[in-house]
Length: 238
Image: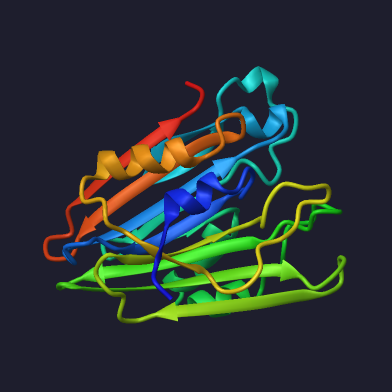
């Protein structure tokens, strides 16, 4: 099956929730990472991405309006080394980085975690690990989801050791809007990355997200030869 256009995927889904895209640029020279968050409640929408220590954190756009920071304030992106990028939809970012620093693995770290305790949605935890350098790159994705209720976790891991130029994979928390929200199903979606310019790419992703529900977007490219990074952050609120 041909890789799909990510903008078509996002535009056709009013509420994909939080999503991770990892892949390789069309010219094969750069790694590409993107992370977006959406929100239906005022508390969820009251957030912005802020750069910190080579990654980003979520913060309240208006601290006075923040009612519950649990599950929505965290570090979605961390760079534990110049060659490594960790991207997740929760505080499992720290779990992964701590494990890597101690000589552990992405998979081992996530085997200590489960889905979010937000009944009845049981929001999945989605995570990605990208490694780039010396002209090469690889990435891994994971989703931890409920098998039905609070006492049944399912852990899925996907490894992409030789990503093709112009392709990536997208994983997100929800299959669409609903009450309760239906979890993402199946393998990460194979995506075409054919927009060379980061501003064009970031703008297309942002415009594809539902206008009422989009909150923030992070996009980064990493030069596979010299490690130079270019980052774009778009926030609905400032």
